[in-house]
Length: 449
Image (cartoon, rainbow, N blue to C red; front, side, top):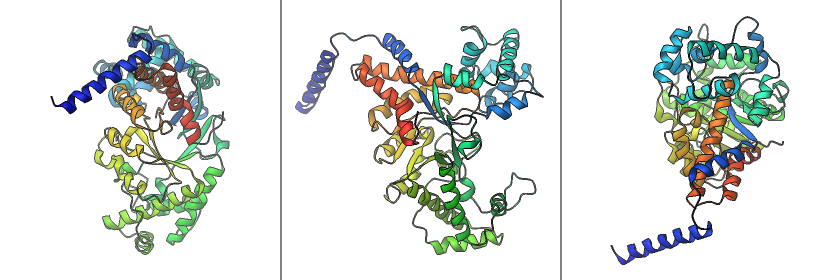
């Protein structure tokens, strides 16, 4: 070992000794710290920065003609059905037998235990599935059930909501705040292959808003007016899921005449070459960002984890670096969703260097508490204190209940390791927790309690 290496080793030894001394001698075990922190984190109000929770009003209406049971929840509901699909309990049970370890199910099971009486150490059986189904169905018929679970049992104070509606007046309760996916303003070329008759996408957009879109300037005016109206009506953020369809390397140097020519072809129902289509999409995204910059509002970008059968590389958050590094969009708040997983370290590093970029670990606890634990541990070390949030990305009440509970547990575990290891005091750990669970989101989305 060289003298330089001996010097480094001595320095690290001195740091460890100093840290231990500052902590007051022998350190407390991780488990006891975690238990104490988890109890304290439960008292911190939680802002869910990204949820698809259904509107309880039409959901409750649907129960007039159907039941909300375990088969309906596990067999065809959002993420978990990827592993437990089935139209009968027997089909669900067979898939559950092979996939009961998956976090998509474990968070829901947490709700079965805490909300509907499944024994804490038990897994579902034919009998307990019937009991849980009866209790769950009865609870959801109560108009006050969502508030009971969200506000009282979960201590959720705000939902950044993608469940429907674009105005605050349309929200189920005052603590729901709308987010609007603006992909429809960016992806205007070609036909809508999923719609009946496969209409031209631009024609559908014009019909939806009751306007003529004969020129690019018509669409530009529509984008500006609708975005301004959305935020004036209580909206708190836009969202883009562009990564499901293309890479995120939007080019903000596309000349307008080039976009104009491409748009004219779209109006004539002509196909665009790939380069033409990208240029038009890039231009239209810059129109969205221009409106956001004027208002100094956020936009959430889907990054990382893709849906089934998709191009994972398209979701690499480093594509956004192209926009961030120009400095043109400093007044736009870029939110990198899902921790960029599996590009989490890239997402953390990029976020670190741009003060208008924010990392949100929404969905990570739901699909892998282990991945969320690693991401949180590194993000807390590397990011400025105000640039980290963590939503749920859940789509039903039971899934959300368990994910919020697991989120606090994961965060408590990460912070407990840092406290027990002598890296943080408990006072600082709790301050970090409050920022991650509440304060950062309140500031980012302009909310008040």
